Length: 167
Image (tube, rainbow, N blue to C red):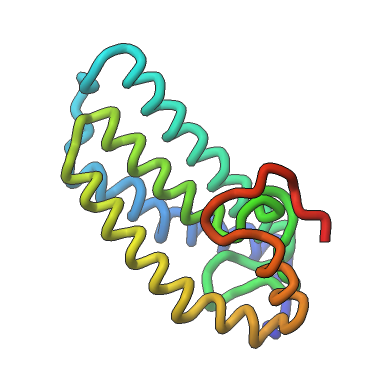
């Protein structure tokens, strides 16, 4: 296991990674695809649903990132936490950050009526699933052993539980 970072380094690393990873994937690239037009597509309900998806994604993403900093690490694979993060949104689903990013992208797709963003979201999902299956899950199993195996058995990866896991 990696040595835990100081609280200040954990927060700095977490904020930097937030801008470098989800900031680019859910912000910069969608802006490049759509230009974020001033006038949203669709009627009032479409706009409301789109903004709810974006806002919920942002809140969940920021909360999940903060959990890593509070556990003296970052979500970045190069500077992980010393302990497995299984609190907050992680009690409902194993991949809340990825789901939040997808919610932000799909909310923008709906807000701007962009099929390009829908296709981009599918590509992001495929890449994320490949990363989770090929790197993240094997690494977490190797690092945290039975603790991660138990967590994985009890908390779904992609479809949130209705009740929080209290393992």
